[in-house]
Length: 198
Length: 198
DNA sequence: GTCTATAGTTCGATAGAC
DNA sequence: GTCTATCGAACTATAGAC
Image (spheres, protein in one colour):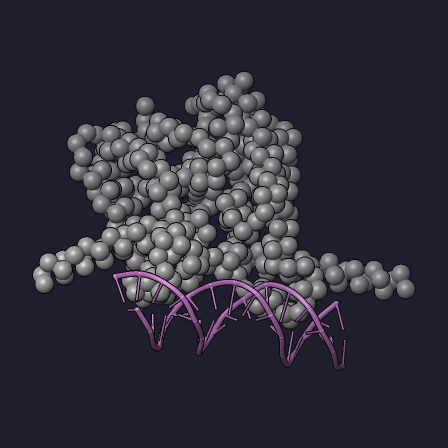
């Protein structure tokens, strides 16, 4: 009895993951509005109805997807902050992580966040929650800049603005690579150059 | 007779402009798929049917809108290239133009191009035409970089890649400001710093 | 837990009057 | 040139069988 409950939970969790990954891919490529539930279900190889067994609606699933991504990013920034090494090392690590690893999924996550933050099909509360989480990660990055400035490693300027420049640059380059016209291997130095006294 | 024909043409041209401007605004905010013809027509204060008197379809209008934007950008880059002053002055002028002027429309145009270049709802030919035009403007920027490198004004590196970095940075910052979370006045120096020796 | 069938709704596009 | 009314396709979401 307890065992079969556990098994059900495992199946549920696995399916949830599968559907989420499929949705991530499709939402990133097509955007929220252009994404049909059918594309998600066929990518995940499940029936149409099963989608609604796991998620209340298209919108609910989108929101939870974004929240998971933003939470993950907050954790990553935290990890960078807690790393040993100079603030510069920490920022380098963060940059590396952003542009390496499973690049495709990283790009997809970026694209989703970009769309979500400017979206107009969400309630004000939902959007505020996104923005709040995004700011939390920005503040982490700003703290790294601030520490580095005190050690004379980074250029002067409002740390929060530097964080904005940093994120904008990262996102611009991610967006470029997402296009596939002429992908470039982003060198961490090129990005860091912008912010370091060397 | 000739006179009334002229007047008809004027009305037509003006309406065309009005509808295009309304569409630019809505497409930029919502993206292609989420944009309803009704939103365009009510923004332009015309009836639903009249839209189809001026444009063959939603897609045709979108494509022609993008082409107009890209052609305009090509012209702007050309103008920068032909300007007197050092290559650095030329790049500064281009950067200024991008981030000043009627900022809102500039942002809208940027957003549209960003979406168009990664869109999947267009035929391969349509997309190739966009990419081709985008590359044309990139090549102009790359030429500015190349000239500047010979004069020792800019950092080393493949001029085409520098153009990519430049455009990515610009677009990342535009995207940031489009969000309205914490808009920053982009300083031309901050952008230029990335590429200049000094 | 999973599937198929379908109800209900939205939206692009057209027809026809003025 | 412009408007209103309407069609028909496509899509989200639900119901009910297995």
